[in-house]
Image (cartoon, rainbow, N blue to C red; front, top):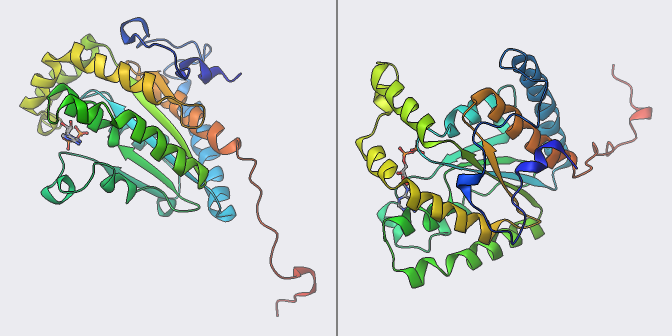
Amino acid sequence: MSAVDRYRVTPGASVDLTKIPTSDTSAFPEATKKSSRNQLGAMNERLSELQRLLWADGSRSLLLVLQAMDTGGKDGTIRKVFTGVNPQGVDVRGFGVPTDEELAHDYLWRVHARTPSDGRIAVFNRSHYEDVLVVRVLDLVPEDVWSKRYAHIRDFESMLVDEGTVIRKVMLHISKDEQKQRLQARLDDPAKAYKFNASDLDTRARWSDYMAAYARALEETSTDEAPWFVVPADRKWYRNLVVSQILIEAIEGLGLRYPEPSDDLGNLEIT
Ligand code: ADP
């Protein structure tokens, strides 16, 4: 079993996020903030090699779904984990409040259009899970509508997996205290203040409702083929190592090889 499997949500298990640590470091017990820089650098290189292999093979793709409470570190994770990976092979897509056009379609329409094509990596910065998180917490659609979505999402993801996409879903798990500090830091730093959004405080006020919505989503949609990981995210350096490791193992697990050259290269002479 891999060290990061401790954060994998067992399919069918009940989830209580108040009991899951936000500042654990046990998957990399030797690592420190300082030593993690070199370790992350090595992981960046490995992920970059694996992305080249994924591209060369051309038959599979990888989808990373990132979800978190505000200030949970989605942007920082993407920046740090994908440093050094060829930008041509990675599509990062944020999903905000749906546009009128998006709302006029089913809720999976906008995400399906952004799933990775063969050989590529797609990162969802928020995702279709908002349609069972914020939508549920704010009663944006009735319960009999959102409650059917877990089954849709399982089927949708299962179809993507059957068609060649590897899916890894990560909830960056921060404590309410850590969020307070990060929001305060945004207020205090002119270079970060633009990120402060007063509506983040309304979301924070509903913390326990969001945790309940997350728990239900994790219980309903963590499957063997499209697992969720609840990653302790109070320590940014640790979160980066864990998410990198999850992705490295996901691609390594495919057993890809570089394709054989199509021509008999032994007979070629370059003049
Ligand atoms: P982020 O906070 O991820 O940096 P934004 O500031 O653009 O990005 O915020 C995105 C907002 O869009 C969040 O408040 C999120 O809850 C909201 N959102 C995303 N998807 C939906 C949805 N399907 N319905 C309603 N709101 C949504």
